[in-house]
Image (cartoon, rainbow, N blue to C red):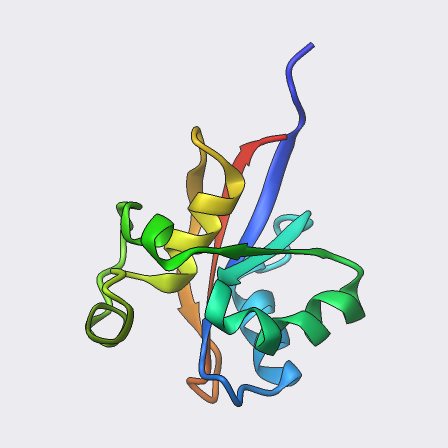
Amino acid sequence: MEPAPVIVAGFGCRKDAPEASFADALARALDGRWDVDALATLTDKAEALRPFAQMRGLRLIAVAQDAAQQVDTATKSVHSQQTKSVDSVAEATALAAAGAKARLIAPRVVSADRMVTCAIAQGEG
């Protein structure tokens, strides 16, 4: 029996991003197409995302920056490259958290207030 697919939403954010920004970015990325199994972000941003994950009853996966730097992403964000040496924090953390055979199913989107980015990856459970 094959493992069930796992859907992970990866986030990049400003440290002071409100929960509404996470909700907006997630809704834009999902576009009503999937149910999320877990949320992911860089270790240093995990505390900013934790209340949102708890409110939704979702597991939060903190991805080390060096692990995210090893992930090839579709989007190349100048800001992410300059501040984290990661091409897209949202895409890299989604892919890293979803596992070795993960694939991006929704590229990075930005919340309306531009405080949060979100991307969706699918991996094996």
